[in-house]
Length: 584
Image (cartoon, rainbow, N blue to C red; front, side):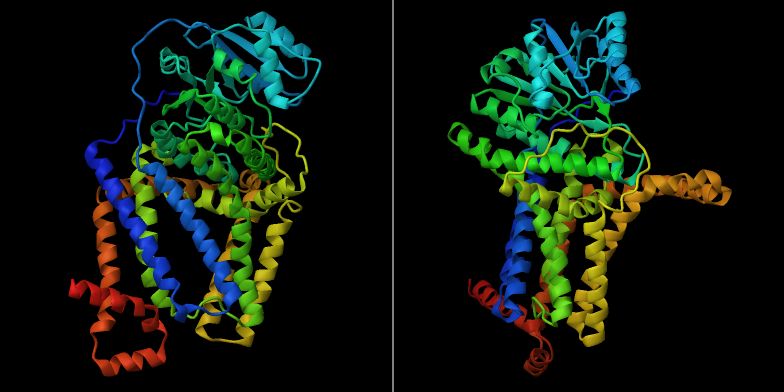
């Protein structure tokens, strides 16, 4: 495993360019809603406002990202100070592979900074007990199993004494220099914990692993880096180093399904500060099967919603305003389950009921949305200067598809929170066994079938342009659902490539072509990042030219245009803007 250098903070020029793009993006967002909310665009009122609600949610989510891109920073490495005593904890639960635990413990023992290594063994496994004894690892177990991982860590805290405590997941393998870039931050007595990147070494194992990893790249890059500026650095379940006295001040590691976030909330409420070090100093496993990924996401969504309705309300007054905003908005990510469901239902209801949410020409909608879409894409590509590794840059299509296909898991987590149904704390499965995912894909299959029925009925019943648009959207939703089915069954199908030479040859050819495309794509992305601001300005100017041009046509053609389409009606508010600008 190679060491990856820390990311440098943006200079003044890059920060100015990024902030300019964000301001343009906000303007494009306001213009989009101003145009879409024109009275002439409203079709079916209920469907229209359902559609607007999904747009509002999506834009708030984008604004949340841009808020974090506004002030990207890197905490400067402090001068070497005192030597700390350090305890490093990793956990074991029955059924986890011995090889994984041994690899992690061996890597922990190889860390250069002086420390003690502890295995918090929930199973009191005889084999691991002997292995730890032979290799100088402190083996700890407990008889009372409560509070899952948090209780396991707290039990180890009682039997250790290090000034700093590192929590490592059993699948995360650290570098020998793991602690070198961390410990000196504790020279500041206000620092309660230091978080580093959570990176993965198995993200090429499957589409599920690739998508799950892609969903983390922006978060562990520019978003977490900005949390350094805002005082909201989030503790993650793995690779986090705590000051013992900070944990003691809140009664130990906080419990819950989202125990890492809960611990960070408690520490921030107590006034402790946190630091994020953007360096890959350990790599672990990301879920590679659909069932493992779904179990992880259900645990997180249920845990985060629970914190919103319990701990957040209790600790609200103790947070500063940045932390109130931070911990209040994080659960909004999992509201996407409900929003995706609405997006699936709108074209289905529209096609089956022959009603439409908006009465707008498709070309008109494309023009008013083009500046906003361009801003979203280019800002995201631009901030990828500050993701951690080259293969983390890109559009992250697989991660987006996987997120859409997880809608019902997020929705389940929200419903479980409302009805107060408990979800057991189960470690994310680490195996890579082929499995039958038909049952857990049933909600997606149902959406797929219902969308196909709606497409067939809608086009049979009516062939107007709005029916084709809704059918196209429903067809896209079918593609999303089909992706989840293919990704879920991928491991089962992989075995066939070794049985049939032709399939094996084609896959190797595809892999080599993909590698060449990846190198080409990387050059393209680098070029786009360099001219991102100019591209946004050009697209905005071009779009507004297309809007302004009909206003300059002769009145006869204008009147005809108005009668034939509703394109011009969408831009009636722009006439007022134009008059205002000319008079000014």
